[in-house]
Length: 118
Length: 111
Image: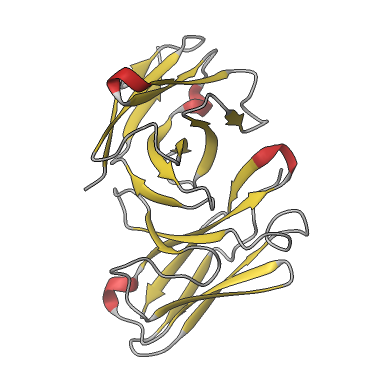
């Protein structure tokens, strides 16, 4: 059974950097899947942030590209998200997910709420 | 890249059928058969219900079906049940910048 679990601080100060990690169990992060971050502001819809493949290929949402870094740690079977210069608009539930090569998200983490506030 | 367009709400009575549309462009929905649909209950992660336009994952009831015509994809829920009340999101691959783009979501109410 594939499981994903987000972890990281639930509170980040404005202008700071949001850092989250997604631990993967039941599947190898080096398998033929993309590993993706999606966020959802309170009461709003889903927004794709970006994705990484184990070979190092990374795709970002152009609207966030200047502030986002996604990385992968094969030794720990996990991948990470960093979002810099955060504002209140970055307050959201952040989900990690596994994405097939055919661009669908078949396994999701439970999500973690990150609040940007001083 | 703009979000895909979905109606904000849809409704139907138990046993009826409801169809939710998802309109994109010739660069995403119209160009690729990489449209997927997700069901989300409050406080939970989204769940995949349709992928590659028409395919159902194991465990998803056959009441859920998908289709596409031109730049518009559709999700149909037949024989509505109370448990189908949720928000549904579509997603598509978009060629520009290797994007994945979501629709704004449709809240399905079972009357």
